[in-house]
Length: 104
Ligand code: SF4
Ligand code: SF4
Image (cartoon, rainbow, N blue to C red; front, side):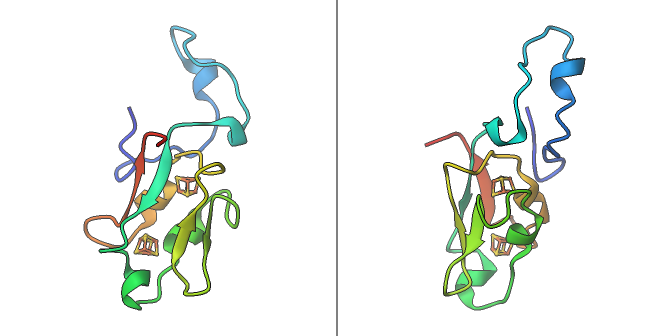
């Protein structure tokens, strides 16, 4: 279990090698599927006109899994988001305005 606000997945891809039970199959970073990020429009700074793009900047699939729309609000592409949680860790809102949930 990953608690991304504390420690997200850095997609180092070592866990299949070190897993003691062989439960994890090697996959590419793009094939990782831990869930999908969801932005809370009620608490996200960008939705209340405070400039913030921490989640967009930290995403390893920047421009694909998450991007800014014309209003500079973050938009997640659920097909491309792998659920790593790096955006959750980087979000300056308290509590975080972006969370990873199971694939909807
Ligand atoms: S969880 Fe966040 S940082 Fe990770 S791929 Fe999805 S949008 Fe990008
Ligand atoms: S990092 Fe958090 S507050 Fe900033 S734009 Fe992303 S979800 Fe909104």
